[in-house]
Length: 177
Image (tube, rainbow, N blue to C red):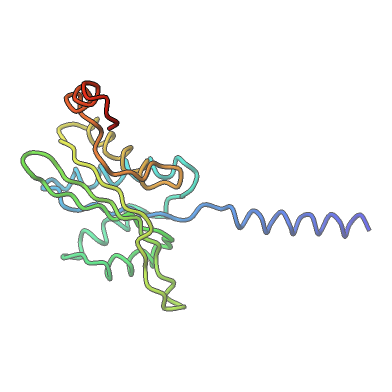
């Protein structure tokens, strides 16, 4: 009887262990004129996202990035195929556009398709920020901001903070901002 209870307890524990294992994540960044910025932001964002415990890194993330970088023009179909080959459950695609010396950066967290079931991929969260990138500290700030927006517990508000001038105007008129 004790052996049966022990076996049941082990089976229940194994079932729960499978349910709480983190999803596999890959990150692909494009758009910066310097490919080093793309790769560095990718690595920093991957680290920020996996520190939460919600996601784990795919087995060979460097190979994932290289395969996409060497493939020429990259589209969602190619990203999906490469991600599935590398065992990713989710991919975070980041697009960077330089405008007036500042980068406009958008990140899409995409749940990958199950090719066996032929279900399409789906964008589950979007994050965005505008930031000058002149140092590694700037890349770290951007990755932390995007990770905060993309993680389940993150703030999903994309509106800019109230400026000091706007705050003073609000205080003068006693209106809420």
